Image 1 (cartoon, rainbow, N blue to C red):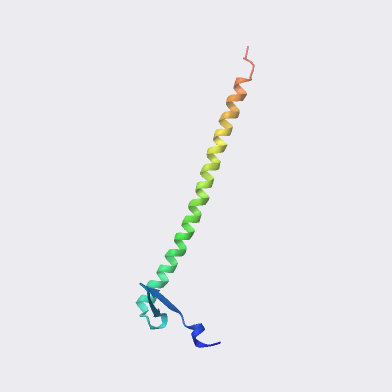
Image 2 (tube, rainbow, N blue to C red):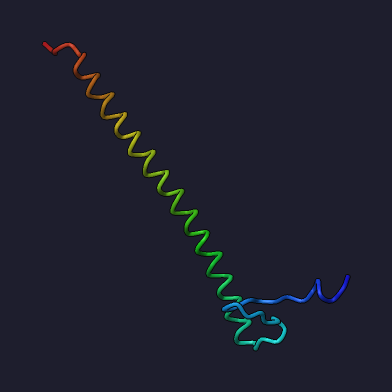
Length: 79
């Protein structure tokens, strides 16, 4: 394998930088950025799951209310 295939670069504002040449502080910031990005994606997934849950629960509530109202409309009056 050649060295060019293993060299990692980062493009910022259209300028390419070798990651190995960056300071430790910048490398840590890059790591934090990656972690924050992963957490943001996870939070979006969780939000979608919660949204689907809320929608399904609202639908279930509507169905149960309609079922109970149609059941009481068809019920015979008590004597």
